[in-house]
Length: 476
Image 1 (cartoon, rainbow, N blue to C red):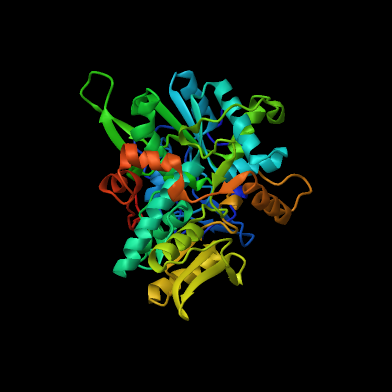
Image 2: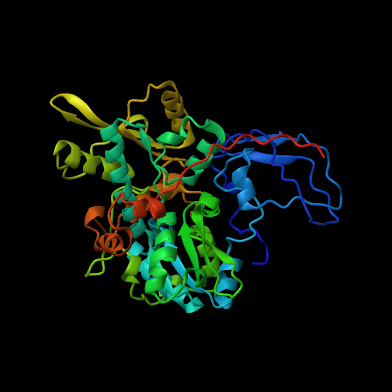
């Protein structure tokens, strides 16, 4: 795996591509090469099965220099947004993961429920079997602990519920929009301008919440300092790599070396997609189904005394479902039992649920998946005509289970069949439980964050967004 690109990352993976406003242009400094950069870039809009040819509006660079694009450069640019940006992945790949194990870092893994489901469907296992077998596999490579991001998902949900109650009570910045999808957030920052940003929830995604928990709190319980830990997440989406690379999600600590300098620490050091984990399993010639099942690391894993996993309803984190139930209970005294009655509106990727009290609609929530539906919501918010109180927005049609980093179709398998299998398997072995009753979440507040919505919680579990101006055309 000597290539800096993941073998699963290719232009054919782009399934929710947005038209670029310009070609990607980064001025090279101090990089020498005998090769001249290409004078034009092709981008494929696979959602419409078209190709566009975009010519950079700049003069050719000197032939001794080559553009080298990092993930952070990509976040600062307004040229394009995709769920699998083909940039030079300086880090965030299997090689970097293995090299940090070899260097003696305390490597900690956090696995998303969607990736767990993708591997379960591929191998014909249950999600709990996959998590236990992956624990065996990763620890055989030298990983110190393997956690489950359903736990940090509950942490994000608790903070989101508190934020929604505050906004609703103050009649402030509604609809509140979920912020766990980095593809949607990056698009909002680059394309929609500052008008949309106040509506986006300030709560970090489960990926970044577990990163904050590990680097600020849990690592010390394990006997490590933050700069001794290398944290790797397994996610269904390439955009999670971009999220992890944001400057908002780093902090500094005193370096262990006696230099007086500060060490810059990322909450998440590397993101591997479900497909990249599959590549790693194949690289190591491992039969995952034949592996023994190890006990789970329960410090940050949602598992009960009988060994069952527990979580929330929904393929994308259950934000609308959980916040709706909590708001109905706290604001209107309505305890909702059983599944919520989501109604399909424009299409299956746009559904809404309402709560009526004395014949009046008091809560109106929606699931909005895919950019086609997002564009309609965007227009309504901008014009002040959006009457929803909360929107669970995800860039990918069908939500996170359909992320661009998931394992691809088997030969002869249809996308519809795969999605049905993923949706069924995702909730297999899962006991639906109230995030507020999660004992691990309670302990994190007791030992670290104090209480939901506290200043400490806002410091570690909330973030902010930035209106990114369009790049200025450069002439060299």
